[in-house]
Length: 328
Length: 200
Image (cartoon, rainbow over all chains, first blue to last red):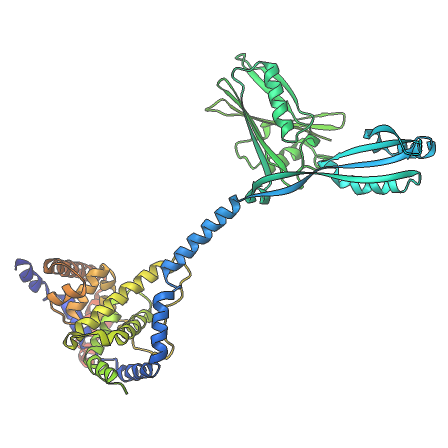
């Protein structure tokens, strides 16, 4: 009751004056039009009833439904991206061609082609008793672009008896999203109890398993006498469009080499005719790591080759990031 | 013509003006079309469900309860509209254009701003009491409250907030605007009062 009294007391205020004016305002005379609208609704009543039931059961435009759609679509996209798909991926092409052993002219023409020196040669005896030289050349993934060129060159030599192309494919199962993104593989090695040789073998095995060729590993001791791994990966030893993230934990020292490759960034001539400062600017732009300063990028030139070494040591941890590569 | 429609419009007619005012004041914080949309949806709902109303004596509180619920729905949609591209409320293009603009000057603007400063439930309660003239018991039913005391304290809180807002607004007004807001409506008298002001 006390509250009611105080409420009544409050009513004699400016707000009452405002409400009083608002109540008295009678500027609207739209009722006849609304009444007409209501009567028109009556004539559509049958249709209206159908719409009503439709609205109750299939009101797909309600916020709840829209939120549910958004969630379902998102869940579907996540599930679809992680769905494992198997695909045939070309690993290499094998070009085989045969020549009569006695056909010296053809053999000479073949030997004039520089790339045929990598081919394996075997001698076979054919049904007629003639000896046939069979050449086999395996073109790895990075050389697949040359296959057609090599075939055309072989076809232009008249003495070649047969030319065969055997593509080598492998079945790869991976989530859909990894197909859409650049490939990257991750290797973690715990080297705490490994000898230098064991660690070297482990690194080379892991990297070769992921398609890297010509990996060289050496070790150095730092000022505190701890082992630092030096890994050299030649530019053409990595399949194009593949990245890697190698972490080696050796006691309390962690070495990490990470490279993310993007299309068009690994052309052999990309550093050609460039000054050291231009190369540094290019690399800093490509890596996009604000913690890397120009002085962290060491460039050495030898026999027309450019050696790039990016070294960054963490301040708070013993993390060491290293990027090495040589480019002609 | 159906008897139901006749009866519905007959019962609606005396309530229409307060219903429109109630919608205008409720939606004072939203766009000018909001009040029309809320009233249209409420009329549709009421018209659809009129047959189910057993006691037509209670039409008034029943109709205002529908308006209140539709207003809450409108706010909920307004909230979701920020995140999802929701369509405007299902509006019928044949629905007449209503005068939903509150007085944009003087006291009308002040009331609109003051109502926008209080919570939705407080605004609903004070408007049901002041504009629609419902008793506290009826407001309890419309707002689905369990006790009368909660409605009373809500009204008291709303009034206190309105008073504070209005006092604050008036203290910030320049002198001549304060006088203008207190004018008598007599143009000759007001002109006489203004002459010495302009001479200074």
